[in-house]
Length: 313
Ligand SMILES: [Zn+2]
Image (cartoon, rainbow, N blue to C red; front, side):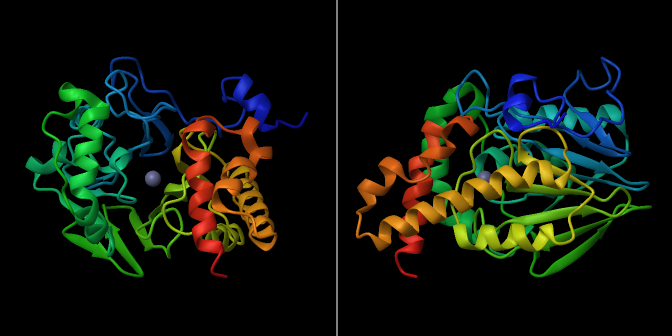
């Protein structure tokens, strides 16, 4: 029997994800993370926009434990999520948290950074991450203070990277290394992927959305090209920025590639017909509506972004 995404959604998604290595004993981390490969732990956020109830817990941060040190990859959408993630690390290992790596600038991936600041941790990101954060910090803080509410927002601050990646960079955790790759503009202009040498697991950040509609804040053309390129030699296991803890490449990438292609094709056709942006947002990509959660929240914005990019081809 073939498992399609509608069945995945209906079946609680267990059928779509790769088998989990082990679910940690209750109490070890309070169930906050699961181990998706030896020494690779992932927390699964909710499919939602920021609100006081979810406290910004809407993306998938994780961490990798080496023989000498730990690297945290993304920190969730509030200081509170960051503290929970940090507690998960310290309940599993007493190795120092040497690195916090941010996969890109979006608040649901960086607002938990502050929870790791006192550890003497090195913050790592794409060489364009600091600029992206600086340009948007005022807006990010103002908008999300309202969305999260005062309690979850308390203590939030923007922490830019002190170690940047242009091209690739290798971090040694002892017994395993992480290969960081600064990607060309796709989901944003500061997407960074993190590959674990020991297990072949790749943290893709928001270059992969599963179940949750993708959001385009970079380049639809760049994103399609990047997914095509990675798909030529796909990782054995990927951690998406939103969706199940870990999946096989094809399960994560295929629906996303279909969505991006559909939007691009529809928008190009409407531009060729002389249609306006307003007309495009009403119908382009509407065949994808049943396939994604949060479609109403983000789809029109995606069409707008695609239109702005593709009308100059
Ligand atoms: Zn994002």
